[in-house]
Image 1 (cartoon, rainbow, N blue to C red):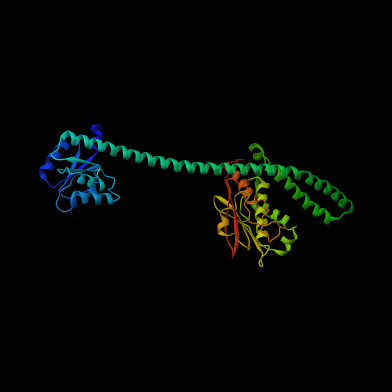
Image 2: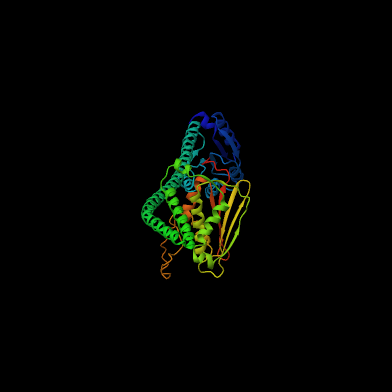
Length: 404
């Protein structure tokens, strides 16, 4: 034990004999220890709880509570039970030594004192005590490191799962888009024949409807192209200044082609006409709006009151699109999961309602979040089972990631 280590240790001597106190105090002080004294067990206990010494030299025979009782009380107190206690006594009977060890002492020093023995026993037990403290510190560090490792493993596991889900999504969408191209081409070819026939006969109704179909099919093609694994440069080339109000009016017109939407649902549109145009990928935002609108329509399918409200608004930094429905709402336990990939609470349109089996892919809202990321956008939601849900798309006016 070095001198530096010795100076860090506090030794408390408990003895009612002033001569013993003087002898031990001088010896330990000269050896470099910080030394405190107490004249009886009661005062020692009070002092120990306050100063928490490194080691205690405790006399057995004292007035009031003796050394055995003092030691027993210290060992039953969680704040003092780990402090080593060495008894000092002139008694040499085995029964007293056994009693001392039973109440928690670590050693004995007999009177009259042998200075070398006192110092040797003190240093031995202080070394043990310091090693125990270091071991406890290492155990604490190990537990903390283990806890951090468990958290890191959990975090990495979640990341790997998320990456795997994203990879699955990529494979699914690639296959889906590849399979969609042929029927889309059939639609376009058939539409061209209809337009030729309508022009020959002068049927304006067919011509008008064919224009709507052509617009919708072109948008589907745009969505397919942009959701395929395109490079960042290709995405930047698709940026254009988009006025949110104009985009929504155009998309609402397409929705009106649906009989249920146009006849069974009451609509309310509140647009801020001063909203500025911002750089966006048009088909990304249109797909987001369609997903939210379709979710709102589905949520109101079994309701009595069916009202869809679309609101655009802005502040200095952002543009907001609110899609509000009067549907069944989202329960609190599901609200935090709705943007997770593959998570859905919806039944398929033709699913047996008694089975409760969910067959939809659960990618709609997740895809919306992914499409907003390049524009530093986000979606928030508030919902309750009585008033329905409000999904809010938030778009910053100054997009840093895709400057024009």
